[in-house]
Amino acid sequence: MKVIKWIGVTVLSLIVAYILLASIFFGISIGESEKQRQIYAEWQEGHLVELAESYDNQTAIKIEEQSICGFNISEAITGQIKINQMRYLCTHNSYKQGLHKPANFFYNYIIPYAIGKKSNYGYDNITQQLNIGIRGFEFDLYYLENEDEYRFECYHNSWLETNSSVVDFEKGLEEIKMWSYYNPNHMPIFITIEPKDDAPFDKAKGMGRVELEALDNLILEYFPEKTITYSQMLNGYGSFQEMREANGYIKLEECIGKFVFLLHEYENFEEYIDVPAENRVMIPLVWASSLKENKYLDLTCFAQDHDYFHPEKLEPLIADNYIVRTRLDIYPKYEFETTTARLATGAQLVCTDYPPSYDHVYEEYTRTISEEEYTIILLN
Image (cartoon, rainbow, N blue to C red):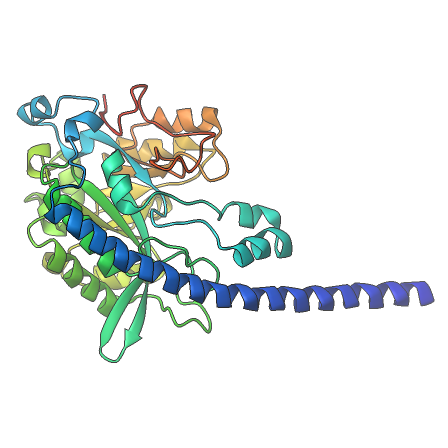
């Protein structure tokens, strides 16, 4: 009995010690996250000033869109190719800049190693990604309330992962807008917005209908003539199901120099559906599992499934003529066999954690969607 009691006391002491240690390092990480958020916010301001000067002086890189496409753009327009007939290389959590040291230590040594290892990835800044040919982005958004105003901020979470090149989302839109007007003939750009849910004791909050409508207004403020809205994507059809069945997607010619904003399905997703269709700017991006339950069939033409090891789950979405978003890899994994299987599907928006990079962020591996390293190709 004494041995059992000693073991019980020892185990309990270890658990208490672990909880205390975890709490200490969690607190340190939270403090560093706020510091890094400020650092990246200041960097973002300076970055925008430098970009504006380079555009004003005409010293910024001019992108020849044909160089990133594995087909002749003029011939595609003449041939009336539609927006759903192309594949675009996209980035996942496009703002990510890795983990700061305390968070990296907490993830890898205080909580299970596998969790932390998945979080320590990052990319070039958004302008560099655009210049290298990325035409699909994902931004995780929170809002911070200040009197009667909402400020949208972009990071993975405000506790541990605030290393972000787009801390202030409105400034991120300004960065993309400047690039777009400097390169007005670019291929369509897809921007996925994933509102994050409320977290306890967190100043960054989740988003409901009021915030989503404010986000719609913000998008139109920056891209009043460049946004393909919900109604425009419907292309005159009564519902998206009707449009998909008729393959009535808009043509590439109508999409040059424009943006499609997608609203990632999330906890309060249905609050956006309550917004009248004619007032919606963003187009819902729904999970395959929701469609399987016959939800949202009339409300969108964009669907996603990220089951890394089961690419066959994409087949019903493609058969039903959705524009499909999926992930090719999940950092730090890049199994070639699994990635090749996903590329063998007809998915259009294919996201990677290993994009081509100016700074060669990950020298061991770079994801491409064609042998010639084009970032946009035609699907058969």
